[in-house]
Length: 127
Image (cartoon, rainbow, N blue to C red; front, side, top):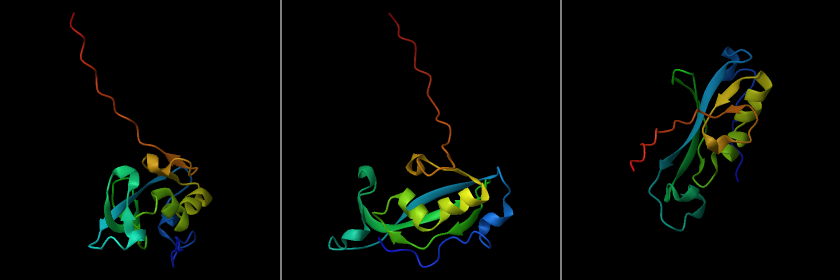
């Protein structure tokens, strides 16, 4: 996997405005591209979710949803956690002790808090 040219800078990056215990939202998105089947690295089969060519872009946002930082694009088949580690997002958050609110794709990163799962109330069974 190619290394990004510009990893997240821990000293001058967007996380400098956050103190210990604050949190940011991190998520990756697949930007679709028009490619042919021969462009294998850009084809995403993430759990049979996308099944299209594209580029993986990681986003760091404030708790209110305001975007703070966008990563350079990686091939679409790159997993979100792998892309976050390659861009230095995980290490920068761990160093500054900023918590990450992210989906299940980032489990195992360290300082990640998964969003609460909502459950539906099941209807009562009628005899």
